[in-house]
Length: 323
Image (cartoon, rainbow, N blue to C red; front, side, top):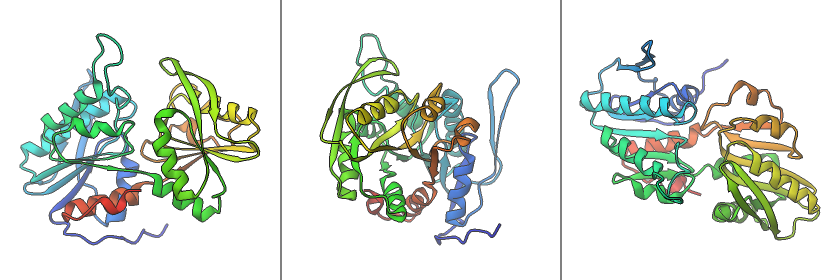
């Protein structure tokens, strides 16, 4: 297989990219786009489950980027991230930027019931306390999580990656559908870029990972519908939304989401659903079961993140990468 030609040129004597175990494939693609080698680090486990980590090269005075999705196993991957930040800080790195393609605990961003933690804020505090100087992340579940950090946060969106895919495939004649009221802003941005009409599913969440579709706002009869979300967890909301759209006369249903959490029965539900295709990114590595599912297509955000890393490293603007 021919080597990928580097697309970026930088001062690599000052920049180093490291990765934990959560998403090394994406980190490798990012390094390929940057044209730089992956930083050397050993991440192992003691027999009792403790993480044993060591950065195996000099990082003194370097601009460090640590690629780590805090996906399953969530707590283990968070601990790897914190330890790597701490190791780089104690090794006198000049600047440390965690690159979080997926930010775990983001759905717990408020105290919605008595005696509940605000877990997304706690994770932000831990990342900062470990020694992060800034954060680069992708499609936060709630944009206000940026405010939990007291360091700069560059919040990217995967929408340009999806839009480029639809442009190249000629699939632009959609009615864009938000699966709930909270995703209307995201869906509206998609609809604007695709010059498409917008519909909204009125959903009621009855329990954790349990939702019920109540109404559909907008005309979907005879339309090819594109459901847009930030993540797919158990796929319950996705499948019920597709059923409701088809019941209202939709011609077809396609879905796209940045983060393919796909826990529990998600893949089985997608395979048995009326959804033609589910398009996701590689912000989270797919399980074997999901990789075998013919309805799931993966797009890479490596080039997007690589361009953001370049801009941050060179103290340039990241705003050109926003939707």
